[in-house]
Image 1 (cartoon, rainbow, N blue to C red):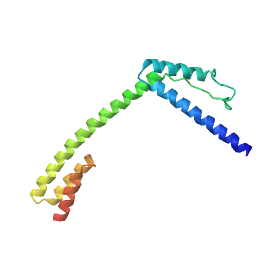
Image 2: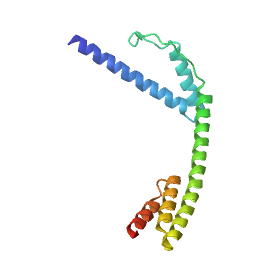
Image 3: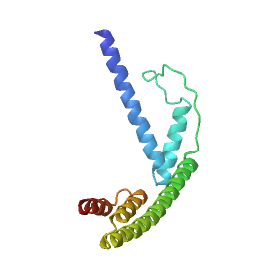
Length: 145
């Protein structure tokens, strides 16, 4: 029973540390400069081991690397935002191409050229896989054949 109690204490200590680290990370991500500075100072203090108490004495040694969080977070967000813009541009271009192929397929369908209609709808789906009208139109052509 003594081992179980010690495991429970260790587990509870671990959970408290996780909560503390989560709060530090939230502070570092804050938009308030004062909150960021406070969290940065607290994390530096912890990294230097000034806050380690006898109860929370760490059993392992850690090789730590200090990261400039402001630059790395801002850089990551900038890259992420640029990627989102690029994906949106690509989606719009593919949507225009899929719509044009849908119209060509519709024209072929009206003329009774079912093979060309299916081909155009399939090409449109290659450009934009989630365009439901192309699936529906292609199925309708298959029924008409």
